[in-house]
Image 1: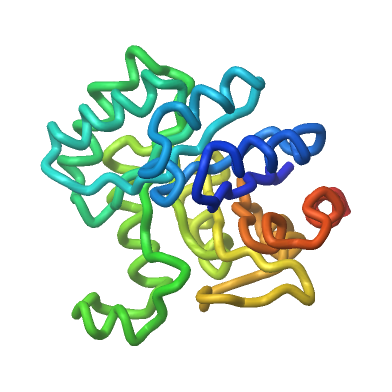
Image 2 (image 1 turned 120 degrees about the vertical axis):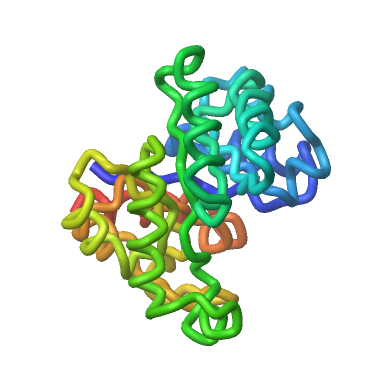
Length: 229
């Protein structure tokens, strides 16, 4: 079954803890991204682990292979259960990060970012990346899988093609999820929770539609209800 990850896109540990305490009875996974981690650092991960939650540390590492491998090691050592890095860093970067960390952290999910859900064809054209967003996602995913990554981050529009190309065991983590009636915000390649689940998403990431809702608990329950349909 598709799992829900709630994105803690807030500015402080206090705000995050308040949200977690509200949602904790419903949600198993939380995402910590650049906004919150830059403000609070490892303390936010420690808080979540102390309360018994799974943590997706979404820092999208992209650097020389050894630097990324060491950054992934640091992320896992503070308690992250899922860590990501950009597929555009190349196969050597991914392979080094995986091989240097898998023995010590066999259950960690090491995930490659393909094409951001805020990026459409115009961004690929500007960067001179050949083909459609789906073409690029499939190329990056193949590179990541061959280098040992457990899966990729992609938009919901690529789920079906990825599962067909790389198998059901290759994890697909899908941001840009927008329940019916919610604001699109800055996302371009989006889908509802049920649509993404039906296509085979392993995880969906939902931030603003839950965190900014008048009743975040009800909003999370509505997403979970869609996933169980």
